[in-house]
Image 1 (cartoon, rainbow, N blue to C red):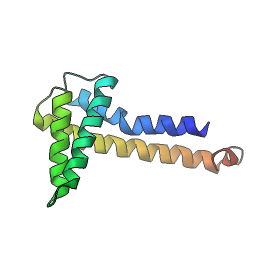
Image 2 (cartoon, one colour):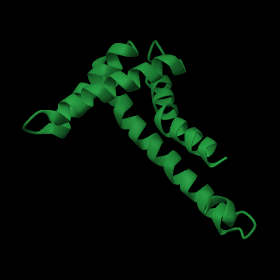
Image 3 (cartoon, rainbow, N blue to C red):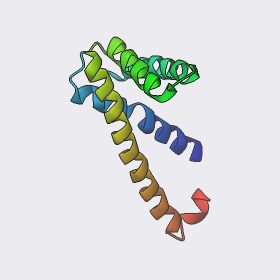
Image 4 (cartoon, one colour):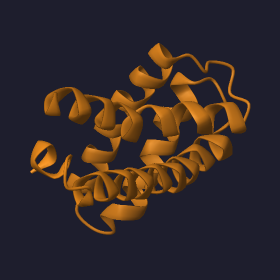
Length: 115
C-alpha cells in the first residue's frame, strides 16, 4: 500500500506540474506521454548543464527550457515559463501532500499504517 502511495506521489510531483504548465502556456502537445518525454529530455539537458563548469544553475535552466520548448512544441520563452510554473505547482502539490499525510499520521487509527 505504501509503495502505491509513493508511486502516485512521484507521479503527481513530476508529471502533473508539467502537464498543467503546458496547458497554461498553451503548448501544442499537452498529453501525459509528451509531458513525460519532455520531462526526461529537459531533465537530461539540465543535468548536462549542471555538469558544465561555470555558472551551472542558469545554464541548466536555459537548457531545460530548450528541452521543454522542443518537445512540447512551444516558444523558448514559454519553455522557460513551463520550468517556473512546474516549480510552483510542484511545490504546492508537495506541501498539500505533506499536510494530508501529516494529518493522517496524527490520527491514532491511521498512525501505525504510515509509520
